[in-house]
Every structure is written in C-alpha cells, then in structure tokens.
Image (cartoon, rainbow, N blue to C red; front, side, top):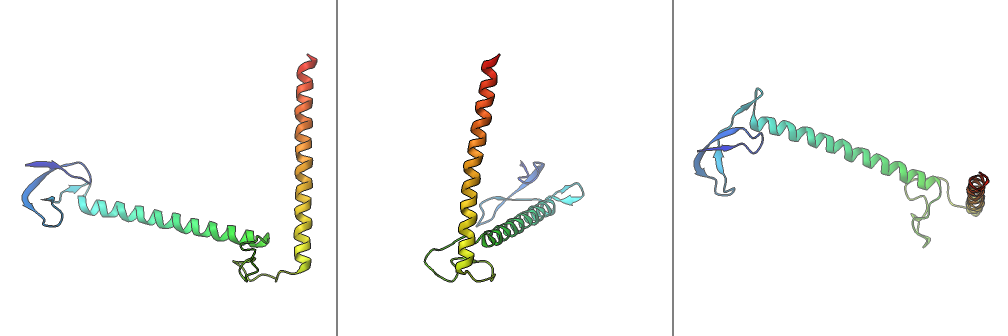
Length: 135
C-alpha cells in the first residue's frame, strides 16, 4: 500500500502495524535532497523556531525601548501614589514638584501646538476651496 508523506508529499510505502498512541501507520523514512524526510522536517522546524525566537527577542527589545521612552515622558502607570506608578521601568531621577510643573507646562504647549495646527489646516482647506471657486 502506498501513501503520501505528510512532510514532503512524496509517495511512501505504508507498513501494516499501527502505533498504539498515535493511530497512524508506520512509514518508512525516505530521502529528499540528500536528507531523510524526517531530518529535513526537523531542520525546517529548527529554522522556524530560530526565526520565532529572533522575532520574540525583537518584540521584547521594542517593548523595553517603548517603556523606557514612556518613563522619559514621565508616563503615569498608576495614579495611586505607588512607587512604580511613575518611572516604572527605570530608576531615573525622582518625581518632584518642579518636574511635575515642567510636565504640565509641556502638556499646555502640546495643546497650543494642536490648536494652531488645526487652525492652519482649516486655513489651508479654506484657501484651497477659495481657489476652486475663482476659476
């Protein structure tokens, strides 16, 4: 009886006995490109696992960088006054009244920038609209 290899699709001879736990027929190993099919599959799985490991490491490094950047911005993780509520990922300078005042000042400046940006966008849209009606 012949069957196809689940790893590479090559035709294989199926022997009659079944494994008690798996319920699949035993298959004779065969060569594909100089490697046994099983060895080839293991090599492919190893490469996939290495790639996954590199992806996970990259994600961890990106998360660490993001958390450090958020600490630099004095992001408030918890507003209950707990020790890790601000600067949860670094032991940077302590939060002081002066630091909070500077953060508030910068936030006001961000709001001012946003309002000016919206006004400029509206002016540009108005000028573009006026230009359409002149022709």
